Image 1 (tube, rainbow over the protein chains, first blue to last red):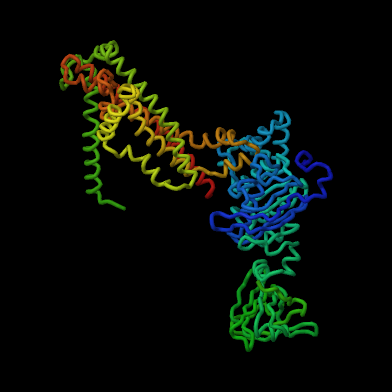
Image 2 (cartoon, rainbow over the protein chains, first blue to last red; image 1 turned 180 degrees about the vertical axis):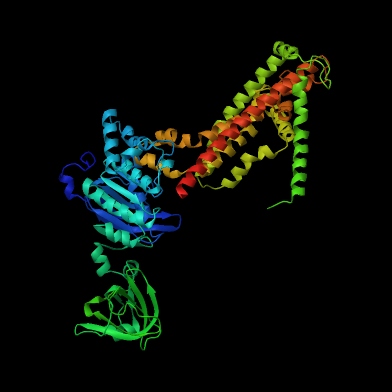
Amino acid sequence: MTTSAISAGPASTAEALPAISLRGLGKSFGNVHAVHELDLEIRQGEFFSLLGPSGSGKTTVLRLIAGFELPTTGTIRLGGTDVTRSAPFERNVNTVFQDYALFPHLTVAKNVEYGLKLHGVPTAERKARVAEALEMIRLPQIADRLPSQLSGGQRQRVALARALVLRPEVLLLDEPLGALDKQLREQMQIELKQIQREVGITFVFVTHDQEEALTLSDRVAVFNEGKIQQVGSPEDLYQRPATEFVAGFLGSTNLLEGRLAAAITGSDALSSLRPERVRVGAPAAHERGVAGLVSESVFTGPGRRLVVAPDGFPEHTLLAEVPHGAPGSTLQRGERVQLAWPADAVYTVPRD
Amino acid sequence: MRFSSLSKNTLRALTALIMAAVYVPLALVIMNSFNAATSSTFPVQEFSTKWWVAAWHNEGVREALWTSVKVAFWATLIALILGSMVAFALARYRFFGRNTVNLLVVLPIALPGIVTGVAFSNTFKNVFEPLGINLGLFSIIVGHATFCIVMVFNNVQARLGQMNRGLEEAAMDMGANVFRTFFQVTFPGFRAAFVAGALLAFALSFDEVVVTTFTAAPGTETLPIWIYNNMARPNQAPVVNVIAAVLIIVSMIPVYLSQRLTGADQLERKASKQKQAA
């Protein structure tokens, strides 16, 4: 696979500058604040995800960077250059759209070639770069097909090739895998990550799928209600959530509070305990635990999910993910159970 | 909904009857245009193309045809420009009075032609004539443009509503400026609706009588007005049949083409939607 023509140029002084720098960026539609004033820096060559539920402002931030919307407040810098008021065609960024937005009347090759033509690239070089881009997405054989003759996954890749062939400073991806089924989505995640590593271009990836964001990203910004909740590596976000929202949004967790938290952790501060760190059995020396009654028992494939009502706390439930074959993996509803977890599995979460 | 075979057959018979009521007289006109006799007869004793030849050489007919073509052309051109622009404004932007403008644009098609005609006639006589602008070709064109705009507007606006705005954003994203985006992406997207609207507008203007009667100066005749004025003259009657036959054909072709255009458009969209769903 050859990607030399598509990868970013050699390291230069721009390396030190952030690829994207947002300062006090805000956007209102009428009375609705889609994005509250936010600051964010995205590094060169980073795979950066904007993660959040729908309506959290993540797509608006992407569209502001692309230039499809003008911000109400703040500035946008690309590689140090202020592009806040520039038109989309004046910015060296390209977008992979959620619905791909391939031109229906142009063949795949013509779709990929379109931007090169606009930039006045000579015919011979154009042909070579189109061929190379189709090679990169492993679809050289579909060059002469129309978008309507492609599968969803193929369209997704063509959209990626069309954006990358222009060698942008930054590639913006708006929920690009949202329309694909689960299997294809997971396959495309791996391919996306590989392509990003090969071309070395900064990727800004919008998604509402926390698993996808954790799998793909170098760093993630978690959005809620137009504000950034936390920016950090996937490990940071998962293990040290800065807010109650982040703790609840990334993966499933047991949020403990009140009397139960006091009984288990000795403090009534809000704390989080991931279900996969809970095991069935008597607590060892370094562990803590609780006894209870299994109120639901669900087979999940890789194991069994137990919903446990702890003794003395009938209003609370604890989730435990028990791997197949581990102790307790055959427990049924109504059985007694003893749960245990390492003391360091419980951490306090700042309240929102 | 399912029908019994009795009601099915009744509906079939009714449909046939109604179709016959509409199209048999038209067929008679076309047949009589090939009738060698001077007065319309049924059944036709002898077929001939002599009245077609006579019509071709008739000065009045030629002049009226030329007038009709000029009127339809200019009215359609005005309708294309103004209709598309209004369609864009209403489909793409939200502004105060948007629904009112929408209603005002569509209203002329619902207004009785006689009202439009009288209104134009009065306006021209009372306002424009003192300014030196008399009834004539210009006033007919303006009168026709009022309802021709609706044809273009309706077609273009409907298409714009269904268009994928993402395509325009994609073009801009890849470096196309506003003009390139419009001519390479936006216009091809609604071209079929644009042409369909133009064809309908042309057909509508070409056979319009009522508004024309009120806005034409005494000497100006469009083809339908020429027919109206010559119908009662016995020696012109066979030529009238020929002209009527021509009008039928000239009106049907644009309507057929515009249906094909918008139909093809919808088929294409349906096909791509099904593909996406699959």
